[in-house]
Length: 563
Ligand code: C2E
Ligand code: MG
Ligand code: MG
View (cartoon, protein in one colour):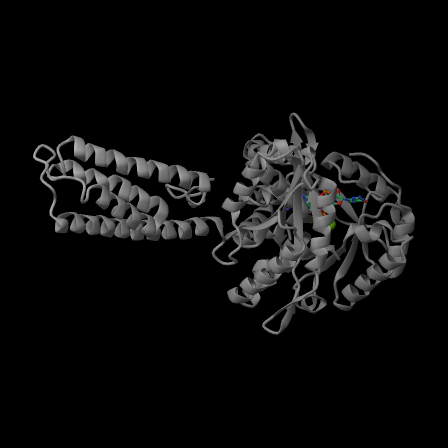
């Protein structure tokens, strides 16, 4: 990271010590040139032109006035007392030295003007290089200067917080760029109110700003960040609309003598990344976070080879009809049988994979493998359905539809028996794009299911228009269902609503018989969870099915804890 700085920095020019030394040097140079002209035979020789050097120097350091003054002094030194020729002692005509003095002063003034304007331009460039062009506050370069400057300080701690305005681009897209800028101004004003003089807020991206907190340790910084986040909660009036900003914060702290600006930024960014991906709004950096990030990055790089070498496999988790105990389907859940790390769960690599095109390769592999397995089960007389999980990124893949059509027709499976699970948050992220795509998927004949329902802030009005068949209630509401009255109300409300819309309800994460029977009483049709069966490799799930079906319609679920 480099910051452009003028050849003679403005800060140096205004330093009294530097100005005093420059004045001495310029005076000495004028005297030396006077002596040189005298010693070389007088002003009729060329050496008198050497006087331009101290004049230009004076103009560079002291500006117009300095240039004129040096010109006048230089002119006088080469003036009335300096002969034309020292050998003959012939004196100069008055007009000669007066003209020269005036000319020197003019040169000094012109150079001074040029230098002043150059300095002004350089100051503008310097200011621009250190400030954000939209908000006008210090930018990333300035932050690096703050952080680099902090290295030379005392041994007090230092913290750096990066604030991300999560819904900034939504606001710009919905209102206008100007509204976004106004919002940013409002946010920065509120944040600045909470900062002391030694602290600074710097814009580092359109929707991100960093707060430099010298002398603030991690515990205090965490409290301050939480307070600032609270301060940003009251709405900002934009174009007559009260707009709320949603923020998450990554924090990195260090002892003062240990500041490496890039490293601190990287740590705060890692913490921010974690804050974005978790429910916590403020996350402070821990070495374990960096380890996880590095491991995830390394894992990502290994995916193409792992696909080629057959290191991925599917585990299947049955779904059970809560009324009659029949297995209605299975969900295919991806596992990575890593040669060094062992069985890696999807949550350790899918979120990273979703940020890259690799998610398309993985999803295609899952769909191919799951359909092959379903076809095999069909040959053996099973008629349940198969669910696979799709990421929102899969929706942006141009030929997802044709791929699905081809795979379904190659497998010879009734498309009704393939269920695609899409998380509620993925559907809601970009509802305008998702709804037409869901409709196209429906036209292939597959079933569509909204996964993790209850976690994605969906609007009930939209739900009515979604072409889906199944609503899977998220396991966080099921976990404490028998004890938590709020969960009970939410779940029974969701079931009523889904039934009203003609959707099948599935409860995921059922871990005990009491929860299963309460859900049945509430009208939930299908259950899935460890209480029935954990996700398992194909042979184990087949064994479980044989045992389960052997129990017949008696439906007395027995937990199976393997895999
Ligand atoms: P999901 O689709 O909601 O899958 C259900 C998750 O809940 C599975 O975790 C399953 O093992 C777990 N689960 C099932 N019953 C219980 C229970 O009774 N108690 C508890 N505590 N957990 C239970 P898993 O297999 O680790 O998968 C996690 C998530 O990873 C999945 O959530 C899904 O979103 C994603 N995922 C899995 N396979 C794929 C895939 O092939 N493609 C994509 N895009 N995502 C996948
Ligand atoms: Mg799922
Ligand atoms: Mg789920």
